[in-house]
Image (cartoon, rainbow, N blue to C red):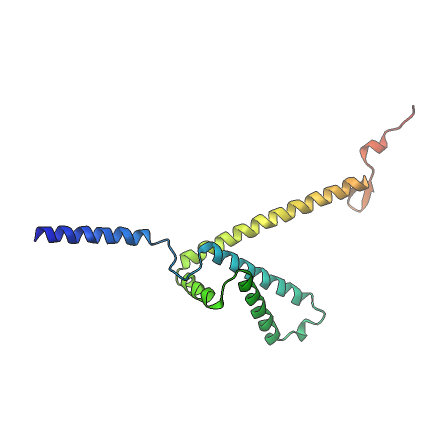
Length: 158
């Protein structure tokens, strides 16, 4: 009897350890966290682009809810094609991550970090471009006046 209890105890501990090792794994048929992050990031970019296009449209009131939904579905389908994922796999993965809010939150946090890094890169290239343009003109803009470069104030007598 004692042997059976030892064996049962050992099996229970082994099962618990095996279950703990599976905690961070995604089930078969569900996209990995990085793949899901990339797809959701592209979908968010598509939403922002569509919103910008709508705001810049000549007649925004002419855009119907149907055409907006149709454009969104088309963009999402193209994104899934780009990532070589079918709709069923994406929806299964979405339901999995939706039922695990901690994992979905981690994905959205990574998405925010990526967007922040990209924004920093764009801002730094814009600053560099502006500095290059100022050097080309040889003048520094201060308020609404152009001020001469300090070297141009020197008199060349000899």
